[in-house]
Length: 239
Image 1 (cartoon, one colour):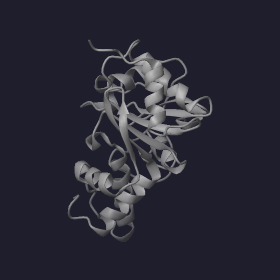
Image 2 (tube, rainbow, N blue to C red):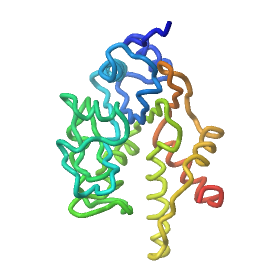
Image 3 (spheres, helix red, strand yellow):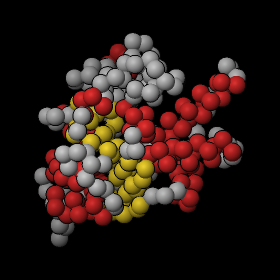
Image 4 (cartoon, helix red, strand yellow):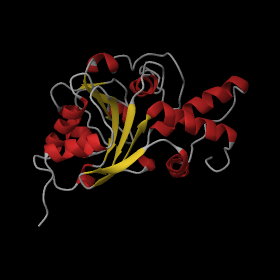
């Protein structure tokens, strides 16, 4: 007989990974990987909120990764295409969403509205996804860059590094640094799984289970900076 996970058991698992009250946490997720959960996605979100508390902040991708992204974008109604948990979270009361046609981020918690309010800014790193009238996808006012700046943590819940969109931030910083030396430097897509293997072997991360899901939990800045230095010093395995 399969026993469904409860909010209490999920909270215990999340705390076992090292997630603490007051944490800013960005979550990549596979809802299905958790196994049966009493109350479904709402129970999972409630567990996250219980663990980070009133001083914490929950962030999830709310990406619009369809063929005609700009034409289909509406901040209020366009679905998130990166998993059921992210789409459920997007629609919840108290969740706010950044205004970006493809790489929108949803937030809930302390100063959640402010955190995602400035994605229309043209400040910071340029990227291939920048499109007027929207701001810089990974610019200095973007939610993903803010989480990187502000000691945010990354939870990969039941997903592998192919889902690690923060490798795009590594690519963007790498490209912008190279543009400084060569204005014609091409944007380079990095091999996420190879970089993930490097991080698993050399990085500072916690691995464990939440429900039935295999998880990784680590500091975003440490992750991005470590991968960037590895790519700069040894690009060939990853390009």
